[in-house]
Image 1 (cartoon, helix red, strand yellow):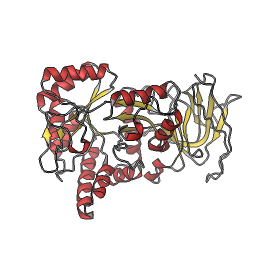
Image 2: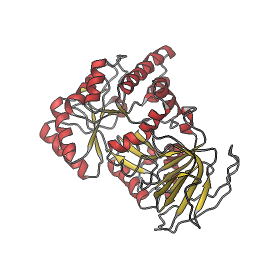
Image 3: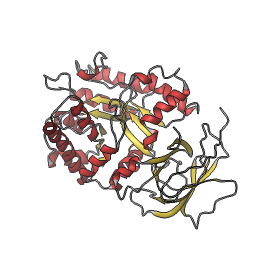
Image 4: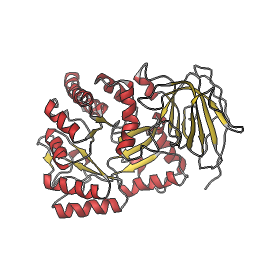
Length: 421
């Protein structure tokens, strides 16, 4: 393990006249301490903010949080003056892909190149945890190993590996790749078990697969979906589904799938009150990926009228589910989508009626709870991992502030600093 490098730098040009020390350690150091002082802190989406607060971090854990007048900072603790800034828990992106050509041969890419790619796609936007919902499993596991070893600066990665599809159900847009098909319940159980044994953290299914622009999606046979869910749940793993349309949503409901990877605006059908009620009763979480639809249609040359109808359908589906109390997980489909900036996603979620606290929950507490790690991440509280995001503005005033990231910390280490190229 390399020795930690502590770089003290002067940060200029911040609205508040920020002058601070910045820790840029690349490897763990058991003696590391840092205090973030003066920020407006949102400990969780439901707690009242702490004005001019302090968060004290030791060995990657939060050891104190409160008003800066009440939190004592030990001697020899590095401090970061956060006056005028906003501090929230680290963000989750629950729909990403490591499938672009630049991720190939991740086990041998230069560490600096890999770290830069991770920063450009994810950590610069505050993401400290991601769910990869479709990539070459061993390649993505190689990225994770290099991060966890301390060789590469990065974030927490969970992955499904390649999605499973119905017979003859590979989506047209991944050609020439052919995705693994499910055939019988017995074979499905075997494939799911093997995937998890190989290192997958969850399983992804195409509940309905768009195989052609000219034909209806191929729907996953329910016995296969049920077998996949049963095998994954037995091993304590979640199942994610690409639904495509309402037929795919019905497969999700009837099989016990945990997470919808998208809204379903393809048929321009709103989600009925009955469907919303069923989804909520089943405890299904939704990653809306609203910006994806605009991005896809615009690059295919769709008219503004078609794009508007399409996105309004997706926004309406999110609005219906969110207002009904359904669980929302933030997700964007970056890695498939080459525009990494999540700002439009925040704006579309706000258009769907979600306030900044609901969006913050989708970024933090909701995914942490869904993945069973809410006792150590997702909130700013004593004993939690120091997964933190320092924002230049307050998202209570404008949700675009969620994208104005100054620092991203994972377990107390700086994994993104806006002043570093």
